[in-house]
Image (cartoon, rainbow, N blue to C red; front, side):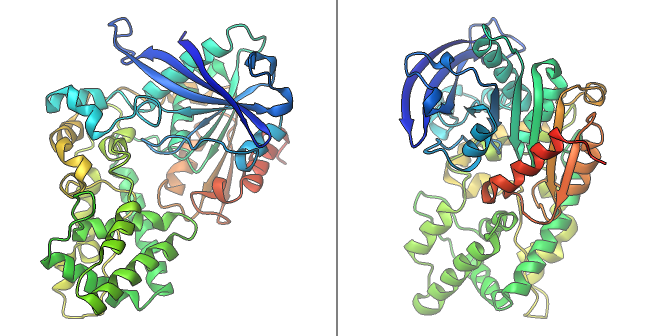
Length: 453
């Protein structure tokens, strides 16, 4: 059970927020070695049921929101709106958790890793920030917050990687969970990332085709930009390098609503700059840098492939499998073709070796990243036998056009979770929960609460 302190209490537009810090072991394989980490969470209750000196006055059941990632913190709730409103209106109090290594929970950054010394020490430290450790943290927090409560179970809402964590929770502590809702995040039950990226490359290719169908003039614009980047060293404001591959990584946005449009705007501006000024201006370079989160949330790059590993190495999966599609993604191959109208494709949610040269905050972690990519002794994340017999109620939404979490692999995984009711839709992309929380959560709760005939 985690020791904890309430560090602050305040109200904003219809809700009261209580902030907590929980003390938990850094390494659950060696919980008594004295190494600890602090986990931050915000507890949100309706203002009319709140007492700023006694948060336990609110007797509502808990639902824990598990953020997507890996490596991203929860946004602070600023009002009773969006998913917060939907959950409160359904009778919950909400716990927004900054997963270990993010936000206020001992955030991992270039600076905080300097004390870890060697590449091996950094790699070992980074290996402790996967879903299994996050779930152990949650269980410590559950025991602390519900120690005196009549109802000892709580519920989960997991978005994207948060859904991966939810399924790990179902595997490790099924008796602690009442209801589990998963949005865009039923995880592939794989042992390494290869089957994941084999599927996702196909989906990324289709999104590129949709992009160039919508913006056909961008074929020449992108070719012009990459031709320039291939022959010029273009520095970004924080010291990063805008290389050919880094520009292609803007395709990460293709999986979100209006993502094609946002990439088009950056392409148009960079192309305009080259036509008028002969270079990509500081303003445009700054916008490109801001569109990519690998410098500010380095955990996202460092353990992204490791989140799929169970007893096997990732071996730079996305890098290896990209070579099967060189005629689409490799600028040297595409630009060497005789047809000047062949499009060069953007990449998706994939991690490449070049990122540890191009992103300023990742450069010092190149050695650690290689060690993590070769690591084979990753612990299990999922227990199929336990998932087959879970008694928790589970509902999930998966999206036809999701380029982050493959639909077919999600459907296969959901079939292993006892009683899981899965809604498959083309109504939204990966961020449907943000775009329309009422619609998405309404359907998931309907699936939980009603018989399906």
